[in-house]
Image 1: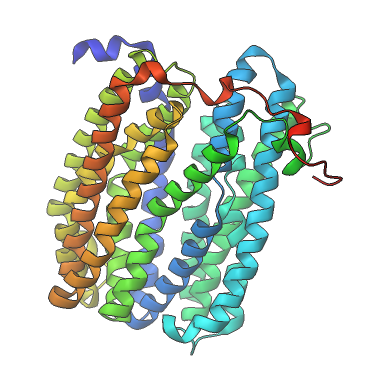
Image 2: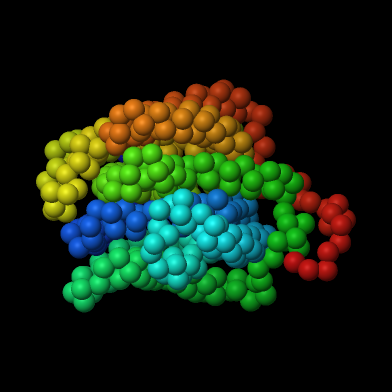
Length: 455
């Protein structure tokens, strides 16, 4: 294992993870402050309602999200190194166009769906205008082109600052809501402003980077026109990546919504609190994966090098996951006690859910190398199998064993997902000589699609 740290790329991954981790640690503390203030101010039922509102918005954003950052990295990273600026602009133009179109459609759908399904969610007795206001965050939550742009130019420092801004604004706004005596409405606005601040910062820095590299001139969001200039197979890659990420992303919000429906609204709040703490302790492993992905995109998956890097990153991430699980068992109860005795059940719930930390973190690096190999449909298959197994298991365990049963179902679901992904990765590695990289495929001919006056 000592030889791993002599690998230049592995050291770059660790260095970038360190940059992200320094701000993530501060952000985690501020996020905890916001949660403690929210939890101690609101009743468990109101905390659950706030959780359901946020989960609903996250679910809609995930459903309508295009993985535009994948387009930027997979179709612009190598051309950028080669100095093919036009190709880079085309990829970014398509990514931005998909983000805008999908974001606006998702926002409208989310508003209409809420007006029809508010009673089902159990939040129909709360201010409708505030919830509709929250829906305006959907375009920004589903937009990932800005993140892809910053990673393309290796501005990990700007990405890390963005991950500090959102929890910092949330903590300040929650303290203001608490100090002014506001209840649920005040905390809905506090969470809204925090997410909005993070979105504005990310896009502002991305646009400044484009300007700095002289790529902003002539750049316009486009879909049809840009798509005609992309390599063949691009739409297949985009759709499979979208479906895969949708299946991954909806695990958490769908779980919260199902727990709220199956167990109770208060249980959904406890489940959300447990998820927030688990997310905080597993962030070091997530940062490792975020640092690794942009590096592996530049490697040739027909060689063994990216697979070795993925395996090394996976082992290290899994070790961090085990450390995170230990943190949950030792520090879970003391942290939850800060929220008051009404939230005590969340500590037990976290212990049932904590094995998922090891499975989830160990499997994260595998997806990056599979995407690079152009095998996004394999990842989609793995996630689809996992979700098909997980949702019925969650419903059954939630009905039969309550909140703790739902926690165990989550851990088992993550186990299924990770084992399936590892199996698929092994098969792909053995057949790696057949791989054709996404950016190497023949460019679409303009006359292969019907002419369109718009973009």
